[in-house]
Length: 221
Image: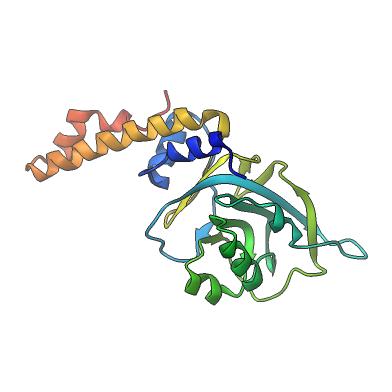
């Protein structure tokens, strides 16, 4: 179950998006942008939730399991799967999508590929991956660990880190720095809102940026 602290950390990011959070990570000198991980659809809302991490490795002989971990995922969690960036076999399909949706799991992020995408698209279930491919991962990969650190698009993800995902991609916020990152993102967003306001008043972009020190807003301190 999501704890009270989980809920409080998620609430910090209400109204923010991945570009704003990404800028805050840059300013604070933190990594977290998941390179090469794209949304399955142009989602109009932002997903925020604690990470439930899963690592897959090549299957043993006889092979191990591929998806039973989902029974342990809490409502509101984001399933974060490290399949080593493999694009030759999938680790998520329509049965997982249906079950995740019925359990109110927030989204799935895969360093790898998914399949049966029509189900995720028709259900509106948020999926983020390196692409799509039809071949099953059964007997090709197996679960190695759950809720241990993983890598997603070169970003490190630990269990219960905060995942922010939208139509632009996925960013990972270290849990211990979540409040700081959210506050920094809001500060950056405030400056950008003021710039947009000045533009509507007829200022040039150069004038608006200069007035609000835009060029140093995202710069690492």
